[in-house]
Image (cartoon, rainbow, N blue to C red; front, side, top):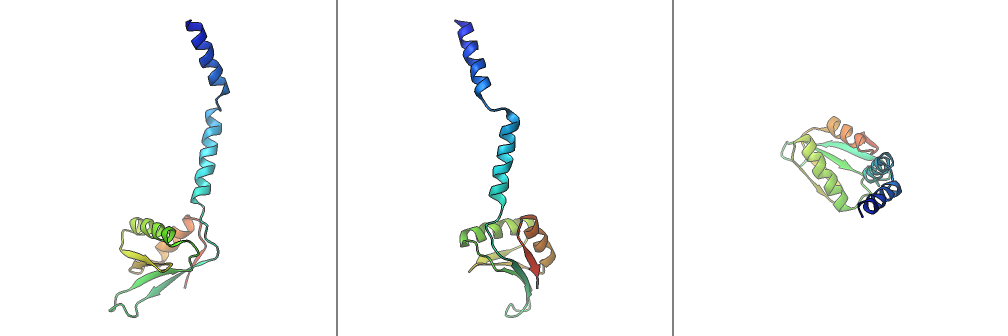
Length: 115
């Protein structure tokens, strides 16, 4: 009786994919999930007008949905440790953070430039 159980277990092990193949498939799925669906280039703009003398960095040119822009804004604000918002397909970040934002967007796979 015990031999029958062990035979079934070894047959099941042989039919399972090996761990190395599974890890490669998972990393490929993660790469695809992280790749942005953005087409075109994003513009990073520094602005002071109409803000009572306070500066802000604005990212424009998104072709993503508003919910995806909000998710990206949330992650960006957490990474930089600053405030901001996402409205109307734009992300506003408090302060002059142009270089930091450019590095973040490029690391995420977006094409961006500072204007």
